[in-house]
Image 1 (cartoon, helix red, strand yellow):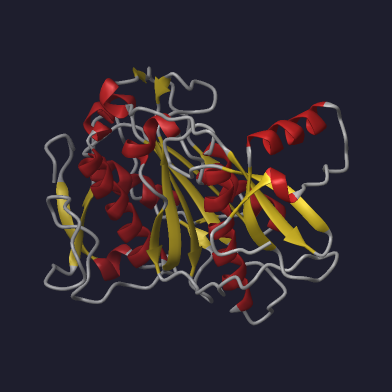
Image 2 (cartoon, rainbow, N blue to C red):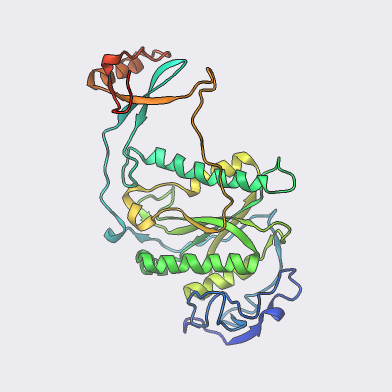
Length: 348
């Protein structure tokens, strides 16, 4: 255990730790982390874990096992100062020149905007957000179909782990951030029976976009028939151990199964930050997400015919299309063949 823990560390069997909590004990050959705090696997590990029994200015046990029902959100606010942005966090951004893809069905032709789709592109930021959120929501819907009542959505738990200001310079290194993510998921998987989940790290907050404020967003689903409780005190104690930190930590916890709130969470968690795209990385999936049916050919809901991509608007076509939008025309203009640069495999 790190020297920053100013208390006496003792090894306590997992059976005694979990006594009275209603949670399942880990197998003898399973543990979350080693005594040094490094993430490890299921086998060849000790059957006990470490906890802190005392610390300066703390009279109560930090591992106080009052189970908190997830119907009540638990939030701890920190008022420490924040660290400014570091140049190592930033990467060059791009702004692509969008193309206008022409789609054709029985209703006629219409043009839609098509970008490059790069993570560091500021123009494609909204499209990338929607694409990532739609993928997560598809897994949530697939999870609901596996429940006994297929008409309901699963309960998704949401946890936000904010890194203390004094330690944020350490997690500019992506390797340290990846280790922290893995340790937190091991805690959720082995201790709280998490079945699958996602994680996306946000480098800044909405209120202060110019201040480095890293926080890890975990959205996960607990296994069916497992306890629907999260012991926030235990999560905080483990999180302090992972950080080698003995002061207060900032954790937000909530849950929902309402479709509207689930979609809002998916949109928020999977937000893309083009200027931090390298440091942030992609959305990380953990566990075994349910399989999503592959999308087949797109059918128009009005004419019930196949929607085909036939080409892109040429320069004159783009000018005509933009003038139509500028004039406030609700109906899209008719797109003639001479306005389209057809795809090689399409014959008009």
